Structures are given as C-alpha cells and as structure tokens.
Length: 74
Image (cartoon, rainbow, N blue to C red; front, side, top):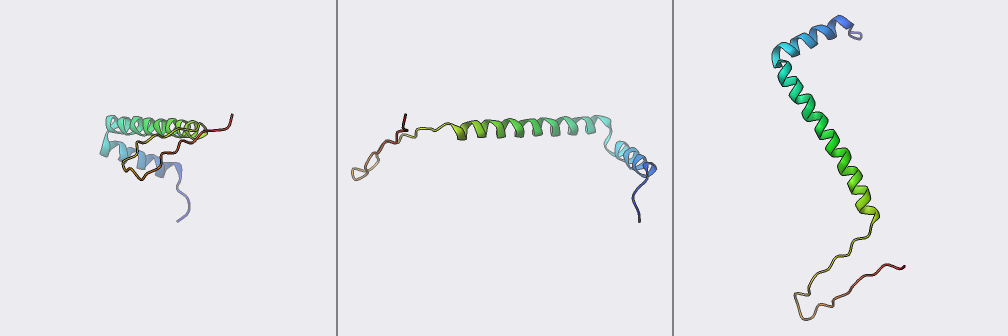
C-alpha cells in the first residue's frame, strides 16, 4: 500500500475531469480562490478594527439607568 506513483495521480485526474468537466472544475477553483481572498481581507480588516477604539453610544431606556461615556487618554 505504499505511496501512489505519478500514473495513479494522472488516472485520478482524468476520472475527475471526466466526471465533473473542465468548466465546473474551473468554477470551483475560482470560487475557492475568491473565498480565500475574502477571508484574508476580512482578517486584515478585523485586525485594523481591533486596533482602533470604537465609541458605543446608547440612549437610556430606563430612568434608573446611568449614562456613562468612556473616553481614552490623550
């Protein structure tokens, strides 16, 4: 049961192309590429957003709620 030779991989590739077709494999490849690119962009944007403090403001819904504003030191 050793490793597969190049001929085994070529036969597997031919079978996959015959089953799915080249157009469908191209679409799957481009979809996967755009998903990876979107993930990288999201990770980059997430890191940039985490570095900058954000101010959250909410209106008090109850008369007993104290409204507090957080400020950063400058």
